[in-house]
Length: 243
Length: 57
Image (tube, rainbow over all chains, first blue to last red; front, side):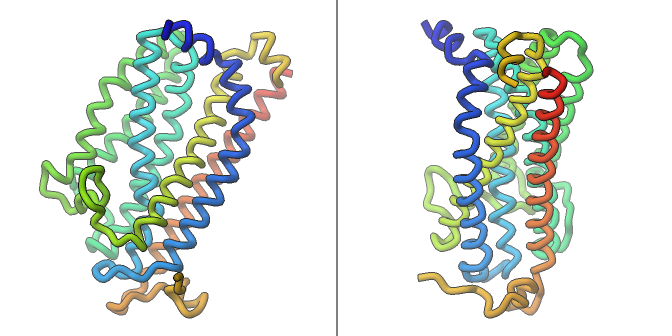
């Protein structure tokens, strides 16, 4: 029954028509939330007692870091669906998410490095959180290269799905690195179980920027998956009618 | 409810902290990199989609 449900609603054709309808709404609402939250965080909150105004980078760095890890988990979930139920769309999504994940991880690394200069006095440290994030970035690039090196899409999709699932072990390592090892990187300010360590006046714009950034990244995933579907299904008659 | 953290656009650009350090260069650099990365990615995908659309047609 689950298989029938997934196959019915996860056909590339249905997906493409549905996301096309939602794209503009997601884009404009997310852009509005992101810009509004950044304005709030950058200009309407007072400076941090310890870090001064450099803490404002939090509104750009944290959303990118959070989304870079979330995208990998999304890839792992899609890979599992592909391997279990052989849903073609899941394989397309795994391949589509990888470059977007690489870009968000790149943003997280660069923004973290720049933030490190006034905060730690250095732009780079061989710290567990930074290294595990760098590994995530290299993994994204490796997955893209691996898929592109195959001429047979079916084999490539299978290898990619298996590697993504194996590589997902890095996500809890990134998350727990600040707890397991002594790191320059601070521990998490927001957790599910405890009260946030930052003031609510700084927290609300942070949530807003995370939601807005997530929406914009969702739009990028939509575009990337659209490109993937059009490339892989270009000989189908419905694609010719679609374009 | 909301008060501006800076008195002028110049102050917002420099972002001088209480310890005397100017952090604007770091904050604005990150803003520039984030928006540039997002804009370039949107542009590249839109262009690739339009290009493959033309080929299919």
